[in-house]
Length: 299
Image (cartoon, rainbow, N blue to C red; front, side, top):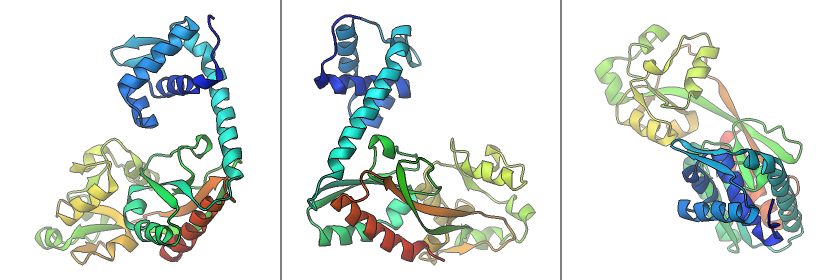
């Protein structure tokens, strides 16, 4: 290859990895919080520096060239090293100030976190909070989040986890909708109703199939991948849908469907990188989340 990459060009490698892993400038821009033009310039600059074509530009996105494939593993190793440096530096910080980035599902972020975060900010005004409200799994190992609230137990050895409790799910309909259509008492009657489910996320479908129900996307007459939007659709009378039992209790306009349906409970885990656990600001937020969420999720 041509010119060497100086240590100040980590941003170019970061851009390369984001495009390689997402397959497009738009996806990489979303993941990095950057813009497509900026990433395009960075990729071009890296290719000029290395004097290599790293990507094939196609109508459907970017695919790695042979040269791009060759530097992918060293680039990933560089990312791991940069992450280790950052985590080590953060672990030695002592001030109760700075930013803590929390990722949680949309439902947890909207209904369970706000009061806890307000209490943290009141007690520790030097700590700023970023909330990533998403049902995707942001990567703690690469500092896409500092603390995560997961509905499954992370298995990576570098992570510290604690179990907070469980989320119980129920099937609900708006009272007006049920008054109009009738209240189902069997699974067969439920399937005659309008059902609210996911569009591209197959979570509900897979869960039903695991319990012996021949579910498919066509079962759902209204589809959306956002849990809060689905709950709003239930409340508006679009059909029957699922919600956290604790959240639904606050809405007198909906009614739980009491049928023998095997609905799983979701475990709630709090997790962070072990190098960050005892950093003062991380520790303060961790303790506040642990205490606040346990009261909401413990049986």
